[in-house]
Length: 435
Image 1: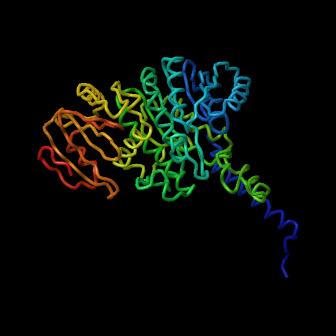
Image 2: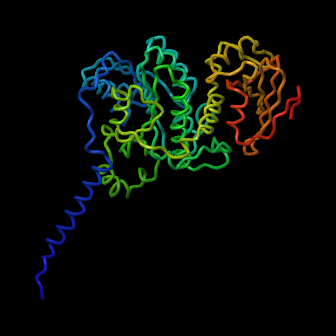
Image 3: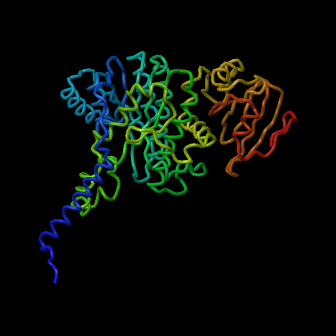
């Protein structure tokens, strides 16, 4: 009979193998070899980081403060924000760190924050859309939007658009949008975007993270030539409070046996902030825009994130839900009896048109009580189509705009507009015909 390794040695060997495997797994997941370039600089730059009182946002703010930036911490809870600010100031010896209230679940709060910031600062060099909520029970924002979509996408959509003026004034400037690998599991369910028919916390989260990437790509197109870049970031698997709504954070057994392993294996918040800081500051990315990064490297996105039609439709929906046009137009929208002046529409459309087009074929899309109408000064043309049989949209091109309620605009050639529509029914050249 051959010699056998004593049992204690076998046990020790097995334990060592497991521990070694866990260490290797930790290095793979956390990106242990990732290091920030100590030569990065942010002196003279003004930065906003949302959700920066804890987790990745806090460490991102800390990193930016270390590099010399003036940091505005945009947070919902000012008490926690002030506590985090004091810690960051003491650690970095940078006193130019400020707390400001911004609740992304309340569009009024977002508008107030943006308005006050623009009064304080004329320029914004970096905007980091970091705040988020994950897999929570179905809750609604103040405006009645499902919480994950409302905070992760809609709130940041509104904030970013309201801050484009100071971002352009500071060009070259950057926008960083925190997304997630979860976007690869997401779909934009336009049939039930607000999760009113059914709600799954995981699906709603993935939808919001896909919305982040689609927003990034559409915004990058709209900002071409302005000197403002926008990129999306996956921070990795990080131990933060983001998972507080998940069962694993509530289970006593999980807290005893599972969470300690997670804390050892997953990234720390500091490691989770590295890719955001890299995308925000690295000089090699000065002209990079519309991309997706993970572990400080450009990565491919899911096919669903590459669909320009979905990105455009989500953008227009987001404009309507956030009532963004109320903030960005000089025209008056106060009641049912008031009208847009034709000159105002013309001026607005010319500013928003992204491609060269004939004025006769510029289309304005106007929402009124669930039905969409379009108006401009061309001869009357009617185009009607149906999206997934969920709603009908009619474009009526007349010289006199009627009463308007909710308003959103597209400036493009009619044929381009039709190409963007998968479910075209027909195009009719008879004046005044409404389908």
